[in-house]
Image 1 (cartoon, helix red, strand yellow):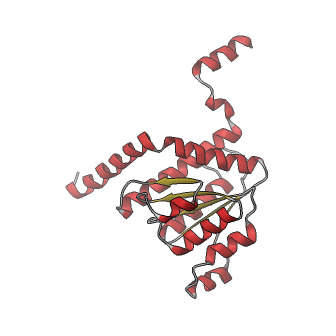
Image 2: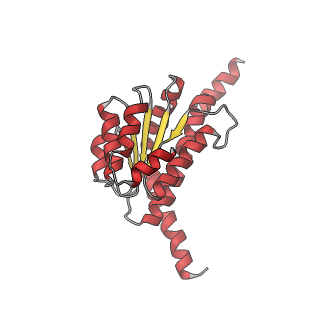
Image 3: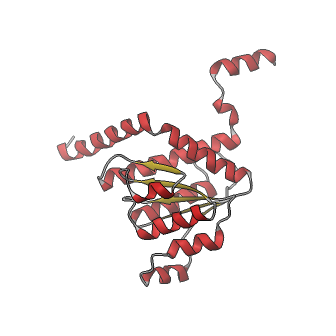
Length: 204
């Protein structure tokens, strides 16, 4: 394998390995909050900027369609799909998500912001508005210690400043969270330990 190509794979493997050790509880918590919202007739709103906007759109599509499991569509909405919103954003306003969240989100909902650097004013304003309105917030960002931490109920960060690795791991995290939500909602037995399953089988 070419040295440059091999470096990409090795860096990806290293950052994934590091996150498996440190980030599992946060991912499980995020999935639990999203599942709880859905079960209580809430909705998930996703948004992002730049490439992270594409990932936010992808996250919403996984819930509307499916990750792995065949199940009913779940109410996930990607913010910034409306043509008038696009034109408004093009005017340079930083409150683009703040206005949508104020108009749409309720305390039963979840707001999920995705960003590479955690410094985009539009993302921070949106998350701050959600928190102020009593809406649960989840953020997915790059290296921690950025402004999103203070306005996020669950702050998931990737410990690198390399944009390529950040986006790669964000995609993996999105897939993992969606898969876990499906397990919680539609396959709760997946949480049982092997001994619990054996005990249940012996009673049948």
